[in-house]
Image (tube, rainbow, N blue to C red; front, side):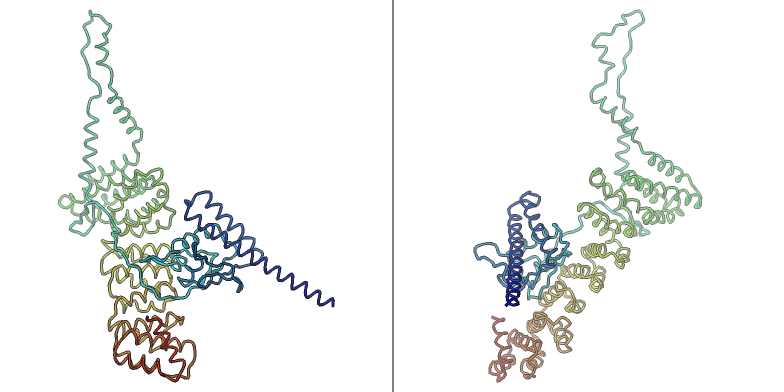
Length: 592
């Protein structure tokens, strides 16, 4: 009797604890739904939205600490926790479960250590893909994968989908007339424009700022009339100009003076050895100029030096190779690397220098990419990072080799950005580089390369077919969509061999069905015998994969719509084997 009482007490306690756990989960989901609703009504930094976010975390953290991971299984219109319904979509209001189910999410799990920003990013994604758009630009699964939220895990199944319509756009909007001399060294001749401003300033400085008048004779009255005194007074404009001249003199850079002196010394050298020594001094001063963020001084000096390079064709032919090597030397990481410390404040305290920075680095040779690219790993503003990427892209248009050499670096984030840049260079060489990058160990790099190739709207089925077995679900989806754009014999033969040789690595439902469906869309008559054997043969094999292959074969035959295919389907519809008839009926339903 006592034992029964103890057992009953334990059962009651267990039931009570389970109920408390379910109520806690429902509370978390309710707060999450409310935060998502607030996100649609208020700006992201609004107090109401921030408070609702904090409420979710405040409710979720104690649960995770007490019970561990919170896993929600996703069904069409409801969320389950430990097989119990904890959320049900309401037809009259926004839905939470169905968008997850629609995009293939099987389950989602919140883990200890979750932060407020992760909840915020999840809400943004849920709201962005809550409604299925007519021309979707991505999907919920892809967005979650790209955000890579560390304490929110999920599993998604593949679904048949169409690739988004990719709109081409102009990425590089680089201005300025660039010239290339006979020796192949790219230079930007800004000397005429830059020196004009200097000459005008010098002319202004020569102007008198005050007039003079003759005094009266010694015997005259020494007191000046009011009219006489105005002769000695400066106008407001003259005072302002004088202040500007004083300010210019006070802020004159010592580095600029040194560079001017070195340039004069360089122009007087008649021996190659002495010329090279002066260039070494100039390189160090140029480096110091960059370290101080004096980009205008550096730009002006390069303009003068490039003018010297042009004139040396006839005056000092032996100086041209030395100057060419100088331009390469100043593009080295040892020189340009000092800019890294200046960049973070460039577009904040020194916003006026961004345009000058752009002109300066666009005037450098492509080898400077090796020094500029690593700066993309610094904490830069979005606008400055884009400027830097455009500069690298413009230099890479002249020569892609320096950029290509950086693609083997271990930093995934950097390589992904460099692949993005390559993807916006319209040439055959970048295409070959991008195809090679689809074999990169990083899934994000492979995805970036595939996106870039997709934008070219070019048939690259043979080169990219290996991606149908990529471990990243998003890449597999994109690849099957790419295959469906080129329904021809080449595509059909590749898929047929893929199925015959049983090369499928990821044997989920939609991966197998996608293979067969695309094969049928390619309209390859040579595939009919294989499809017929797959549908009607081996009736004794009742494995799940075999059932899927039968269903896929029936789906492909329906897509082919040939007489021979219709005859096979007719046999399947009347087969004595339930598995064959079932495969035919499922395919017919999917095809309608």
